[in-house]
Image (cartoon, rainbow, N blue to C red; front, side, top):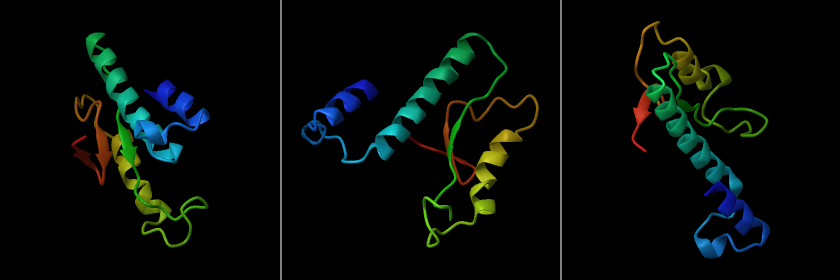
Length: 105
């Protein structure tokens, strides 16, 4: 799908195929799907590693600008929560996490 989007964007036919006019959202979909694939591979190999994808929210940065609703500290809460899951935790794994909660995808 990612290659299809790239090819379509380069030939300026991505809109005809239903893709948005920016790559940002498509890239985020790719990261979520890649995370789910890697999680499945880790489970099959019985690796004791958790992998998740998270959204920090709309954070005041150079990219989002000063009107974003979260401070950098608030935006860091979910990534830090995931990084500090207790030893032996088995979930969340292969999930999309926002506001420290698994979001259906």
